Length: 372
Image (cartoon, rainbow, N blue to C red; front, side, top):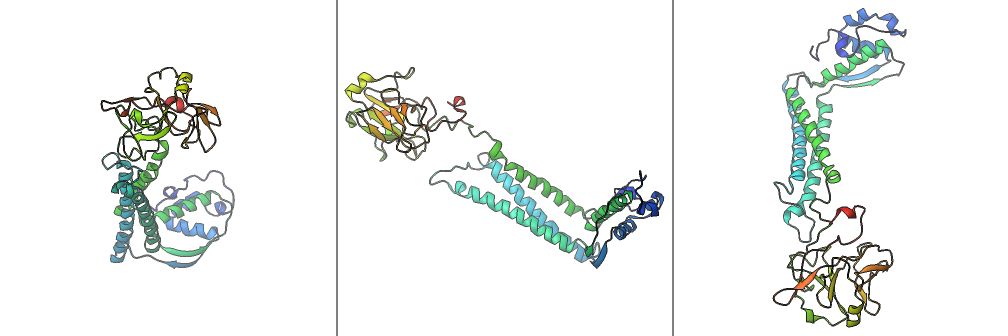
């Protein structure tokens, strides 16, 4: 039975049998009488019993007329644009790093990285705007307009039948059953818009540690230790008891948030007190040791060094680390040692790393045991 069949109230959401009667209209109209009425008659009858007074009715363009076709094309166009923008949003969001360039938040990023976030915002906004314009045009040009006043009362079988006729009549009046292209575009829009909204959840449900970014840094075997000006470091460049900040010899190494290292040359008396953690006996080179410069409490740079007390100090929250005892924390809120970078020298006599840190750098996190 089609949605435009007005022959019986069951097609409008009512029931063939009244069930328990509640008085009022049910006493005035039997199920047989209601079943004999078409949907339009039921709609008007229900309106009268609901206390509805129609003040003004403005009809729409006749179905199939040039004006009706023009209005339908306009509404369909805007909903189609909304679906197109939603699909484009999903393509940009899901395609980045797949078949589109990879987005990265870096200084001096590529054109794609600079445009990625604004492009997502523009596509989302254009889709929402197109939906809004489409809805406004749909209501103004395709739906009949009426002004009515209605009183509320308790429901009954009569109310269920007449209300169902009203709802189904509203569907007929909307023109969707006969406007196949508009209905199809609305279906595509619903899928595309839903996919756009669901895709936003990807940033919340995807694994943020994919590729272990929290447990690795740019340091790798054979990378030289460079000063901020890009010059390499030899063992004889520092005096005993001094500290230097160095970075890996990779592009942008001096700007990487987790790559800064403090290279310390110990004094002879410190070497006699040196306690090396198990498994890190060969991490140093001669009287040199290298530790991450990122405090394990809140990520501040540990840029102060008191050689008389053998302590590396963090100026943010006063955490202190003993350089002669594996940079273990001895004061302040930090609870984890500074990770040590294994170092050696290359064939030209410059310091190089022998690999990455054995533990994640920076502040401790709840899943620390799963990193590394």
